[in-house]
Image (spheres, rainbow, N blue to C red):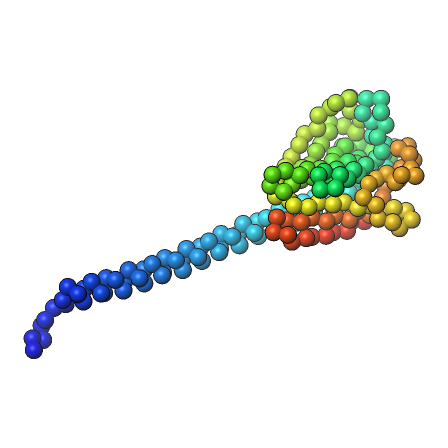
Length: 203
C-alpha cells in the first residue's frame, strides 16, 4: 500500500459537506443567541421606560396643588380624572414647580395632564403641559410621547370616604369645593399582557 496516498475526491467532498453542515449549525446558533440578546435588550429598555414613567408620575402627583384652574371664563377643578373604557384616560391637575413655594396662595407651577389614547399599537401615553395655571380658551398644550404600545391604562382615585372611583371629582362635589383624592392607583399593561400596578399617596 502506498503510505503517501492523498485524499480521494469523494473524501474531500464528504469533508466539505461535514464542514458546511457544522458551519450552518454554528451560524444558526450564533444568530439565535444574537436575536435572543437583542430581544432581551429591547425588553429591558421597554421596562426601564415604563419604570421612568411611574417615577415621573409619582413625583408629579405628589406635588399636586388644590388650586382650581381656569380656561377663559370657565373654572376647572384642581384635579380632573376622566375615563372612557378601552378608549381614553386623562388625568389633569395643577402641579407646583420644583423649588418654588407650594402654598396655595403663592404657588407657581403648571397645569399638566397624562393622557392615554387607544391607537393601532394598542395605546399611547402622552404628557401635556400648558403655559400657565390659567389659560385663554383653546390654548394648545405642548405634547410629549412617553410610551407607545400600551395595551391598557387605568387610573383610580381614593375618595375621602375610602372608595376607589375611576373619575374625579366625585359626583357629589362641585368644581369649586372638589378636594384632591387621597391617593391614585395606576394600572398599566404592556403589549405582552404583563400588568404593572402602583399606588401613590398624595401630600
